[in-house]
Length: 257
Length: 356
Image 1 (tube, one colour):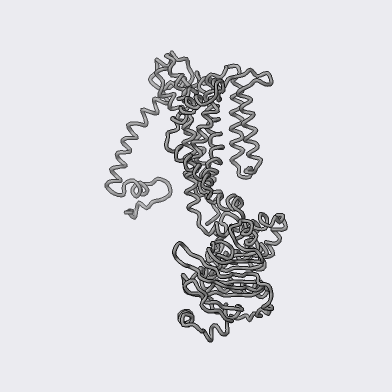
Image 2 (cartoon, rainbow over the protein chains, first blue to last red):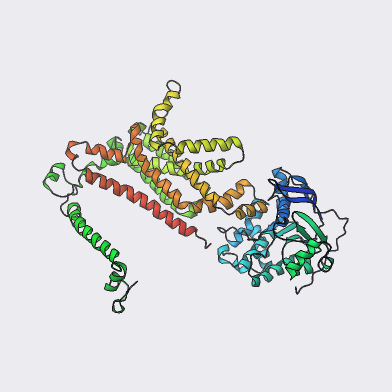
C-alpha cells in the first residue's frame, strides 16, 4: 500500500457505536456463529479475515439485520436489534453496506441509484438529494457516469458507485463484505483507494477482506475468524508479525504465501 | 453452408441466396419443393375467391350468382355486428364510448404518461363509458345492460379486465408471499381454485349460482358479473406469472434495498417489482391476450359480444351461406387487436432494456 493512514486515537472509554454481546447464530442445527463479543468504537477501522465458511460475512450481515441472530445482543448506535421493524429500519439508516457483487439497481441510472435512499428514507427533497449524490460521485471519481446505467460500467466503477450510494445516506458505520473479491486485479486498487480516503475522513468501518495490505496499512484492529468464532484479534503489527494461535498462523501462511 | 464460388450470396434473393438457404441439402430442398407446391395449389384459388370474384357491398341476392367471397355480409350487417341489440338511433353512444376507450388506450401507450393521474383517467373513463352506455341522464334514454352488445362489450370486458386484473394479480402474489398466515392461505386458496376451473364455468357460476345466494330481489348486473369474473380470472394467472418473476430476482437486490433502509412497500414498488414485472412481460402479455379472446365466452351467460353478434347474423337465412367470410373478418379483427398488443409489448421490452 502506498498510502499511510493515521490510526485512530479515540479514547477506549468512549461509548461504543456497535456492541455485540454473547451472540450466537444457527442455521437450523448448524452453529454458524458462537459466542461473538465485539465492541466497535467510533472512527475505528476493523478488518475481519478468515477461511471461507468461517462466518465473517454472516457476522457483519447480522449487524444490519440481513441475518437474524438467535441469542445474545447486538446494539448499534444505542438501538438494540430485535424483531421490531422500527428498530431495524432505524439501524439500517445509520449502517451502510457494500456488497461483494455490488448489487446496484440495474433499472435505475447511477444518479437514481444514489438518490433513491435519501429521497424515500430520509425524505430529502429531490434536488438536494441529487446535489448530495453528485458530490459523492465526484468523491469516488465517477461523476461523469451519472446518467449511465450500471450495466454500462466496469466492475470497479460499479463498486465505487455502490460505495457512493451507501455514503449518500450519511451512515455512522460502513460495512464492507469482501468488496474487492469480485474484481479484476487492476480494479482492486481504485476501490481500495476510495476506502482509504473514507478511513482517513474518520468513517467507522468493518471490512471483511482478503486484502492483507489494506489491513496492515488502514486497520486499527485485525480479527481472525474460524468456524464461527473470533479466534484472535490484535493490532495489525502484532497480528501479522506475532500471531498467537495455530489456526491463525496456518491461515496467514496460506494467504501470505 | 456449401456456397459455390460463382454464386456467392448478395443482398436480396439471388441464385446464391436460394442455394444456400432453401436448397442447401436434400431434405431442405425437398421441403422447399413441397411448400412451393402447396403454395401453388392454395394461394391462387384463395386469391381469386377472396379478391377477384368477390362482392364487397351488395344485397344478399347478388351473392348467389358469384363464385367468390361475399364480403357484403359485413357491411350490410355492420350495425348489428358492431353494436348488437343497442337501439339503432342511439348507436352513437356506444360508438363514442368505444372511441374514448381506445383513445385512452393510445394515451396509455406512452410511458411518460404512466403517473398516478393515469389511474384517475381510467376511473373517469369507466364512469363516462358507463353513463354513455346506460343513459338516463342528459336526455339519453336508458338502455339496459342486457342490451349492451358487440364490439363495445368486447372491448369493455377485455380492456377493463386487463387493466384491473393486472394490479389485482400483483397484489395477490404479494399476499401469497406474505408471512401472515391468514393472508397467505387466502391468496393461495384463491389462486389455486380459480386456476382449477375454466373461465366458462366461472362465468356460468357467476350468472346462475351466485344469484341463488343473494337475498330476494337483489340482483347483480349481468355485465358486472361477467366483468368481475374476467378480472378475477386474469388476476390469478397474472399472480403466478409474477411469482415466477419475483423468484428470478437475485437476492442481492432485496438485500441492497433493505440495507439502504427502504421499507417493504418502498423496496417492492421502487426496486423489486419494476425489475420483476419487466422480466415477465412475455408471459403476462400471453395471459392478457387470452383474456381478450376469452371475452367471447360470455355467450354462455347470454351476453352478446362481437363473436356472438356475428354468429347471429348468420342465422338470418339470407346470409347463412357466408359463414367463411364472416369468421375470416372476425379473425382479422381479433388478429389486429392482439397483434397490436403483442407488438407494443415487444416495443416496451426494448424501451425498458437498460443494457444489463
